[in-house]
Length: 199
Length: 168
Image (cartoon, rainbow over all chains, first blue to last red; front, side):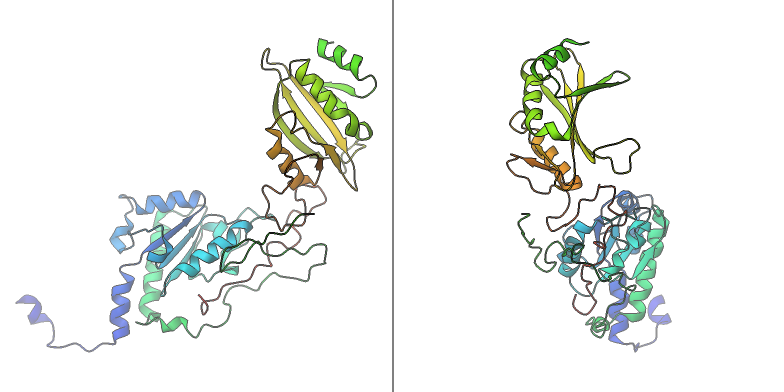
């Protein structure tokens, strides 16, 4: 009685808004955890911090079943084709959280082997600062993703269709001398490695 | 002087120098003699002097090191499993083509350690069965633990392609 008394007889809304409302409360994270941020990610999923309160507790280790990639930890150069391939394997619509200083900017690892921010290679929606971030910060990031989904989400994910261009920071690529040039290790679409003989 | 040094001096006169640091005794093989002397010397240490275990094998780059005369060194940390004695054999190599004989025939465990030294320092090991890179990608062109390699690399971090939203 009470509910029917409060609600009007019918509601008018956009289908996109309904879809986003439902979608944002059941994000399925793909934990791409490579370092200590992964421990905080596990703590976030545990009962004390309990990411299940926000509907994101169903972590799957198969990218085919996920729509939220959480890159937790430093990523080395050799790992970039793997990360890009996992991102491409996730079905639309999908979002990405760059968790921690290392994933967002390279952190203290400013060396030849470490990626200086994953946003140079895959699209990122929310950055979480911290080394490592506290679970509350990751929950805040999930809430921000939920807000983004509610505001921009469409039922057929067409909000991604017109994003043709690269959205990340300016690429650091510069002209390399022939003695300095290397090629990326492998094709990120197939993850096959180029086998060049050393000699 | 320990007995193994007498054995070495008798078999390889003038082929090596020795030095000491605290309780470490070191046998130094010069870059000129290493090609012919190193493997027989290590074989003598292994078979006749009881140093049957290759505990470690690592590289050093002595670029701009005070007092250094050679560019690279490869350090063989030997251990005697009977009396826990340790001995370090240091063999030097120089540019432009640093090369040392491989000790895989003596210790099979040296295979990956020599690959690591080759990967990170560019010291080649003659006679190694499978001298490929072991840590860095196979397409990597430089040897990143050399002292003249810049800390941030030659731009290897940058020239991957980016995945955009539209194509993913």
